[in-house]
Length: 301
Image 1: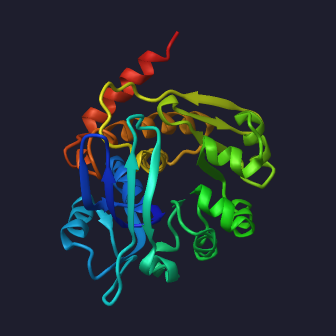
Image 2: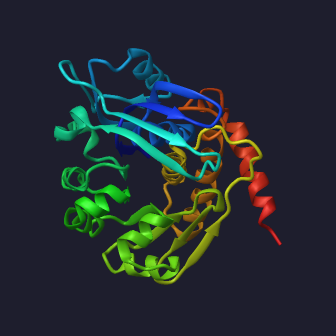
């Protein structure tokens, strides 16, 4: 089954305590689309880039089988650029700069061939843009969205309208607390359910992720790694792997949701082993399956 992913495609500058890279391929849409592509589904990407965006990056995305018909190149515009710096604790990151550029005025119109896509993932983007996409798709089987603290603080009303229309909201632990004012994640999740989604998935970084509905709770551990190079895009990779698995089995039952979270965790574990999507370039699906099995074995008792 096909997946439609809407998100940013960016040029990132990332600094860790040991290394710095500039203008590398990044963005919520990029990470999610690459992660989803491992599962053999048609992946369609909606986003915008400027004249300064290297063609080598779009060429790579096409080698992953990602359909770029929905990616607009603005010939007289500059691409979205973001810079971040990690401390010795790679869970802590400071944003150095955010240059929205052409993203600020991006108002995508879906190609007709995209409108009947069954699985829709709205990666981190302005909530009004996310809502406009929801209103353009025909009859999706599953709508999943992500968000961030900036939209919670600056565009809360628009965000609440978007959340009402999605089946699953994915966000991290600090965002869940900010959105609801709750310090307990279970209370926060239940408060979010009252906005309208059927399920909330809260990412907890190195501590995995939890899924909450009105009747179920599930906790997926993170895959254990001793070396982490760059956590940028890990959450988007988790979501992309999650969507990729669900579309591959075309099943959104509780059991499939739980397996999808485990696959998302595994795909994210590869992402953080190098900068940008460099590690994903060499990952084989057999490696994903091997880590999935190890993770499954680790939680059996």
